[in-house]
Length: 224
Image 1: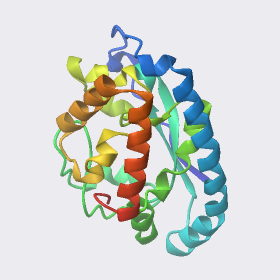
Image 2 (image 1 turned 60 degrees about the horizontal axis):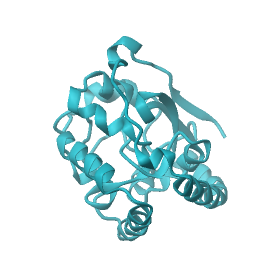
Image 3 (image 1 turned 120 degrees about the vertical axis):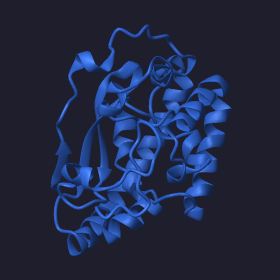
């Protein structure tokens, strides 16, 4: 397999690294970590099986790297490299300024983003593009359930109340996946959902969100 990455990092001083971080109970939960490891191993098994046919179809549709990586902010704002199956044309990051942002706030979304390939659109609707992130979960950078992982550029523009969402690990899924996925275009709504998750968190609530995510993904609701 070949790889594509976005190595650009925002200056550390732009991230407001002087935030006073609090330890959320989910970060200390051994049960949550055990669920993460078990789910990640199962997910990586499925990812390995799917990787070859995905790679072959991708090369027929849009030749280039199979995997895409980007720096994101994790727990307490710590940068980590997230992995996905590539769903856009090669060099899509450099073309973002050519696409209109339909979202409100510190996120970027466009329902008909021309950078998304035909096969990439399928990968996104089925969430198959996210499967390599099981590796991030296994490493401990992410959790199966958490908050939406922001880019470094997004965090560099955060206001004070936004930083609380970084007090838990980012997740493969979360409130935003279950309640709207890509159809949620207001950043403040995502923040509210992330903070609601922190307040409601429990091991059983994580399992509930996992099963709800499976239902939403199978129904292909809200993704583009």
